[in-house]
Structure formats: structure tokens, C-alpha cells
Length: 79
Image (cartoon, rainbow, N blue to C red):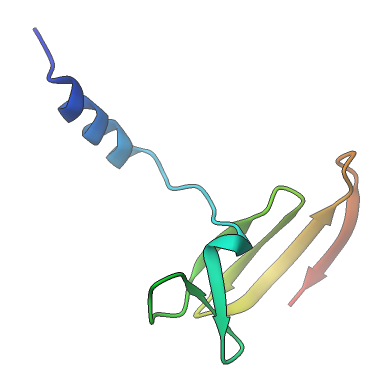
């Protein structure tokens, strides 16, 4: 059975969860975070590598965790 390679790629990409965005992928307007080129406040995970947290309706929510370059915990704050 032969698969059409582009079709296989599309199907595989739909099955994987999206990775967290970085703060470089967002813009701040009126104190809220928006994904670039949209007018809807962003909700989702932020993963900067050394800084991780979540945004809901453009605002920081829940725990935000920061790490040193060596991987040790730098800070953890619940917002």
C-alpha cells in the first residue's frame, strides 16, 4: 500500500499537540498579551526554555517557573 507523502505529513501534523509559544511570538497591547497579527487575547502555554507559564485571556495565570542556565530552580511564582 503506497501513501501519498504530503498527505501523510498533514495527517501527522494534526495528531501532534502544538508546542508552547515564546514571548517573542506575542505582543503586549493595553497590558494584555496577543499573538502577533491577531486581535484576540492569547490563551495558552509559554515556554521560553528557562521561563515557563500560562496565559489566559492575555493575562498571566497560575505558576510561572524560572530556571538557572544549569537547570536549577531560580523562582516559582503563582500569579
